[in-house]
Amino acid sequence: MATDTPQFESFDQVADTTAKALDEAAANYAFQLFSDQGFRRLVNFDILSQVEQDRVFNELVVAYVVLVILVLEAPDLRVPREFRDYLVLLKEKIPKAYLDYLRTLGVATEHLLNWEKLISLRYDEYARDRHEVRSAAMEVQSSEKVLDLDDLSKIQMLVPVQTVAIGCHHHICRGETTGRDDLFKLTLRSLSKFYVDIRVRLEGGKVTPLMRAGQSLKRIIRGKRKRK
Picture (cartoon, one colour):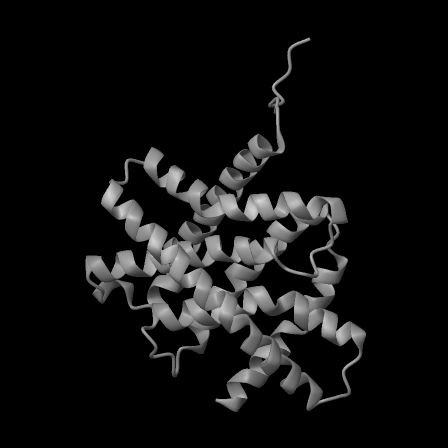
């Protein structure tokens, strides 16, 4: 009997296919946000040079791709223990899979090298910054109440998407973020939808804890803005 289901001979092949799918999803989300008229208004798209427009798009794409990597290495990702080795393999394949995707689009080799450097740079930056984001979130939350295990779990779960949203917003604005909260909220909203989508895929549809964590996201972000 004929079937359309792909046949795989190894975990490596499964990881290759999955990495490709995750990267394409990241690119699609980035393009949707980049094409959003509200986003373009908030970044003053019409008065940006072509070079600057391209830079903004590149930052968006890299943000979504790096978010995939941070999700895959999140310590609270609810997957079977025996699945962890596969996630490590998958994480390692994400950058190359995106470069391969760009290559199929006809992107020149010299540009691929720039993309590789940018992905590596932003991963190093956001992986480092997530520790500060976690500490800041805990400080804000603990100023309101004594933190329990559920609070700590929510904070931990939101760290990847908060970190990437803050960093992406900073780079899009070239560090000039004052007065641009609406742009941040729009970027965070899109990244959050993608984040939930990816975690649900990886966790097999277990969405409830994510939804509970999401309820505290606005309060955490509002608290950070007050501290600026």
